Image (cartoon, rainbow, N blue to C red; front, side):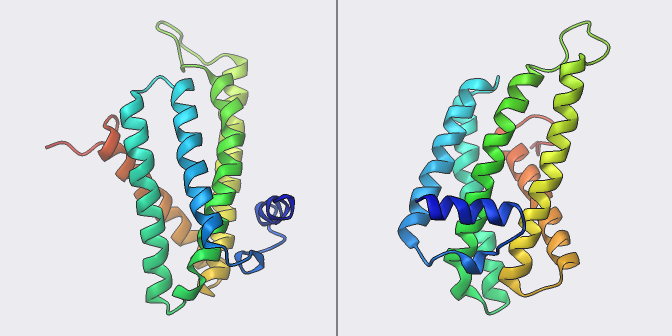
Length: 181
């Protein structure tokens, strides 16, 4: 297990790629469970309805796996699915764990009547931006290797993918940007 975690960290540091991970469908199932468990744990920290958080977690996990498979299938590289999914889910877990202290530091956002963020909220906001950009670059790195495309196309796919995730999450959970009927 520690070798697997080291590989995931090396992917986060852009030193390795998904091709360096083992073909391990069982591990993919474990990571899917860990992803959902971490989202459930985060729901206790965030001021949102737990049912909505879990529903969006399941939906987004299914969306991400289906989108990855579709991208790989279209590029005739669907045999890389397990390793690419392991890389995306493994690194996603790392970044989610990085976001937990940031979310806790930011608190519930600006309090009523508070005109400006506190210094801790400002630092947390900047840290979250840095982690988000790093996460996007890692996703682009994984997609570049999985799809055999240039890094610029990997970045574009990662950005479009993240925007689609945001829009779908807003539609499932509701709130800003949610689709209204």
